[in-house]
Length: 484
Image (cartoon, rainbow, N blue to C red):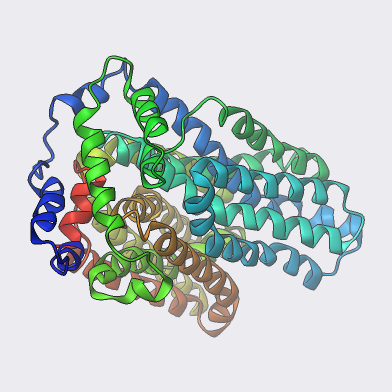
């Protein structure tokens, strides 16, 4: 079914065969590198890919700075601006509403003005938001600034992994796309650590640093070749691809595969939102959205937002526990980027989800012992073990890999609409889990983590039965296989 099914309806059967062949017959599904791709992955030819990735993930670091801002600044902001707890809660949570709006609009923006243009838009909103927070004298400016930074986060969360996936050679794509999650973790951790020594206004100004690097860096890197090809900008497409693969690289085969695939997709009707639920796209949509559902509803934002409260309630030092948590998150995410193209996407997801289940069960046991006053001396150690295993496991797979796969599986003619849907679902899940966490904990502390464990168990079933392995394949190979 899928793209081939649509092509079968072409009136000209000869034309059908002509456009279908490049997608399947000219590709190597074993994942072995041919000459041109081997050239493009050499150290001499990929420096521009590395530079482009670095510039793009400055957006990811800006994302993390936004997410990590509210935790270390709560007391100072409330005291300086005389905010009630309810008003500060609005300030903290309005970020996710801005991100949802950003997620809805990110795909169309990236399709209309390009991946670099979308990065500029996101950066502009973050800069405006940080300045509004810095100069805020009341709750309105504070909330508007937070909403603006949230919008920038929502756009970054879609555009950064897509841009990296579209510029990277297949041998590096997984590792480079995974740096998106690494830099998000880095942004959160840095905001938490320096937020303990800077004033809340000074911390807001530090959020401008990655934005400044991104704005300047975008002048040095090329646009996504696949987007240029889709827009029919042939000369710019050739120059961008050559710049990314190196002056001496032979880009003819890769350029032809990209153009043939896009020409095939252009024969199909322009995708609308309802088209995502048609049979030809349904499998890729289920994979992308399903992974986002399991990533969020496994409880990550409940644990992340309230980790200090978890440690405190268990009798462990909240400051020490949170610092260990932040460091572990960055270290494991960094290690993940080195193995994702070797181990593959599915094994990492399965190992990650298994660790999440075990972490949830250990944490549930610790809360059960605490509630029933059994072996109370072991509660702090069990809680620390469970939470660190949970975040370590999340960082090893479920944190980064769903974004990597999301950037790979959608055909370029629906990538904007489908990517926006997947990102919107992700942000809705982030809001839902962070909003319901306290209510669930009031209902049953250990029951909450048993529920999260059950959801992560369902994630294993989903990955085994639905998610394909995308390691070592070009984007065109992946999408052709899914929609066959």
